[in-house]
Amino acid sequence: MAEHFTLRLVDSRMLAPSVRHLGFERADGQPLAFIPGQFLQIHFHYDDGTATKRSYSIGTVGDGHSPVQRIEIAVSYVDGGAATKLLSGLELGGTIEASGPYGRFCLQDSDAHPRYLLLATGTGVTPYRAMLPAFEKLLAQGDREVVLLYGARNETELLYGEEFEVFAQTHPGFSFYGCLSRQPRAAARPNDRPGHVQGVLAELQPSAGRDIAYLCGNPNMVDAGFNALKEFGLPIPQIRREKYISSR
Image (cartoon, rainbow, N blue to C red; front, side, top):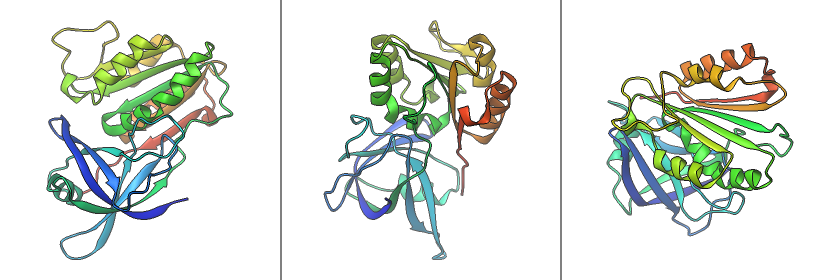
């Protein structure tokens, strides 16, 4: 059930030239119960006093089911953006108003397909970070596989990329592909791919009997990935989508 609460900033660091990782705790000291894949809404006002809000996926890596004390999000800065003005100027100890959690972009207990295909661009990778503990449990069963295709223009924009790389190295069955559309890494890695995430699908040969797919990020990627997966024969119920739209 969604709640309204005040968040206090306790951690802040840059993930990329225009993306910041922010860690909050509730001012009332209470933990936040959420399902990995859900999001918060930040409430504030434009300069003219009009109320508005922005949505941010929760990226906290907990145990996958218990409430958490630390609430982590990744914020893309938009030139002239009202939320950018608010969050870029927020200092440690500063507070904002929020509500949540919301959303159904979550893993389903009924999913029985042997492979998960996760597609992401930009901060759309954040919910998959929160899902890592759940994937760890699934992979421990020995009959599942998880493939994350993450698209960015260059290496500096692969948010949490090293965390996903380490998870892949320590969890057989999890694969991480860095899909770089503008500039390859100076030192390429075996699973790096040029171009966009949907272009790697042909290599993976999705099929209705094998795959459940999740797509999160900019609308162009989500639409292109959705259409490509349908062409491979995945029925719509096996393709979950969440689009991130930048707002001023």
